[in-house]
Length: 293
Length: 293
Image (cartoon, rainbow over all chains, first blue to last red; front, side, top):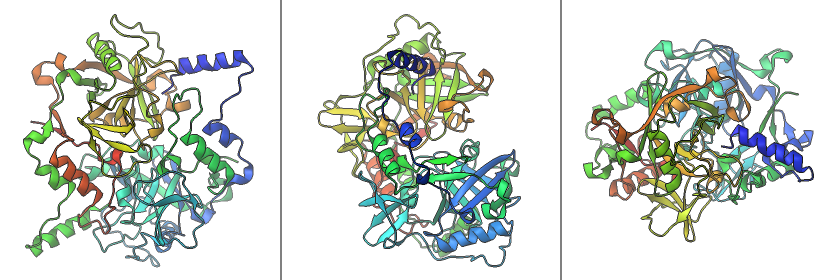
């Protein structure tokens, strides 16, 4: 909420002061990260969606948490099944949803119409970096290989943070085929955790979804087909020519840089802050994403 | 994430079953609220902003938490000072900001250019309804007269939940005059609590702000004046003719209905849910708002 003119003035004063040491900030921590702390997702785990109007959204998939659902989405992408479908629902402070709202488009071979309920998994086998501050919903939260995770007892699950992507479904015991996907565009609706399969996270281009007009029908569905934003194509990055693949990396959540970044996010030293919070919640420290080489 | 076709099917089956008792849901709790549980804010505490394109945003002010800042905003509104200014900044998953980005428009008489730092207040005198689930940032949180509040020791402060409105400022010790205001459009950035003056909450029409294109400059400022959305006028409801005042009410956070609604939000019984969370965080239960008579 720093305004530009006053911000510019503050910078000038700082430069004039000369000797003043710059405070450690989230940005300065990231600027000093070693190259090895940035991890490129496997091209086969990246879903690249091109929307009408030349907008591109890049989504990382999470096969370690929802393997059958993730495999379904990959099979749908490889069959070019999403091409020509739409973003059909935008509900303020909740979700954007895309796919086939009719649920009548036949699924290609190899797609499991009703996968197992991959809403949680064994905590064993996850290399969790614990988050150092308490959570409202679970006794332990943290990050594993870039993913926000909650644990209770022997079970672990992905959490509904901003930008997380899940598989739309009907009432239980339906689990959703992947024919409809959603992403979180508001305050984290953590009560959905363990009730639906999370399968990924939007890494770049999310503004093309979050800034869409909200739908006027119940639950934010668009009233008319004309309001829907078409999906031109959805491909796995591994299917794209090398030159067209997104250059995107995620900060290694097991790195010293990530730990330092979380700490400074909880204890802001920037000139703007007068009282560091001393804490930060899980969904406020989603791992930074970097574009380019 | 329930999809319409399957949702419709579930309803049909429910109707066919006949005897099945409908589960208690957040909506059913609100539907049964007595009229007295809905409180209309005082017209002098409602800021009614009309944006270009016929969109109206209604904001409740919080003079009990930031009296000088709230008085400034009322004085600016009464002077018609915001008229013709703009929404100038939209930063994804953070804030929308409006007012005078040049900071050169002279303030009218009676506006305190640099108010005291009303970032917290005495907890004494607040009738807090404690929130029953733990918070990451404070030992006690809850709601007081419809406002989300955190308390630590003898101090209390408003929290940066979705839709909360604050006063833009430069670096400390600036506190902001009210010439620039912001609202939270993403996951609650609670680290801002106690670092800036919160003065209100958007009650209705927020979609007119949250769905705006994100700005391409640093911090989400729009690059050109043409991208800014003009504010046609901003008035206190008390200044508007009776027929033009917004009909809006907020659920009484001291009511039994609110307590029941929070409880069911933490323990969803709807057919869709397979595992109630057993908890819910403060910013996920912002008091419901009702429009109309």
